Image (tube, rainbow, N blue to C red):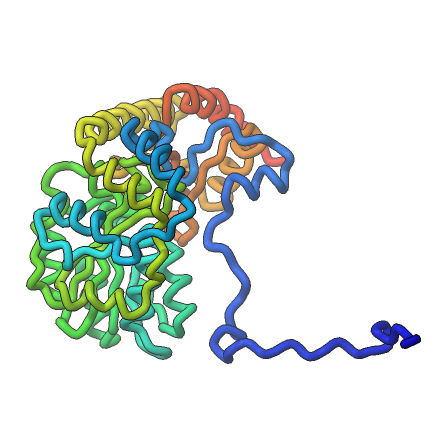
Length: 381
């Protein structure tokens, strides 16, 4: 009978990661409400931190998901044919100029993979969307940051930094997250024209549906270095489905087929997106509800002596009137009261908190908790 000698053996050496990956930390760009609940044992009652839509998706989407569920045993169409044609019709452009993907996050990762080699310079704003930075470092890019100009991303300085650093890529969100500000279409068009053609422009329009008229530039598929991104996560109420799309010059968009996960969008996801596009009245009602919610959040801020910034998004950024440490205490105190929000982290922006639009019941919880959180934050300990 053989002896069990497993306890005598030395552990086998683990295979090494690539040098690039070995130098990266294990990280998740966002702390989710689920993680807060696990850590604190407090059940979140007002989910106001992730810019989801508590107003939910169209009833047509719910029906489409129910119907598609019976066919979940089938692989999805790897070409996303029907969805691409629906998106093309929605935008008024050919289907081959559109690429659906697993939310804007997944598409940003693919765009960085397509164009950024280790050592290439990528320009973005200091405090802008952190998941983009995560993808750049993951593929070996070198980030160069441009500070905000007040509450806006600084278009002139972004373009100047691209020219100075000979950047391969620049990222801009309009409307902006985390400040909720926006630039009108002529300013964005001037920015695009000022960026050298050798630099890829990633224009994130996740909040385009909730922005004022005249925010989004006209679509120009002949622009050789521009990729625009939009999502179903915000106004359409489908954040949990992970659905977004990119569009631009057909040659750039065709590049995604070189690297994408061809089964990345599920069969129910494709059906949900097509149904969402087909219910314009519901989208308009959701946008109106978001607008009313923004007004309510601003009123709550004013009632507590705080300044709410103008918003073109589905959230409102609030100046807490102190420094970043004070705003962090407000955020923590709200979490203790079962209200989940987030805040900007970059210097100069970190004195703010950010509150997502939501139905009245959740905003009432926020209105009750905010004055308590402010008092506790003023008197820590």
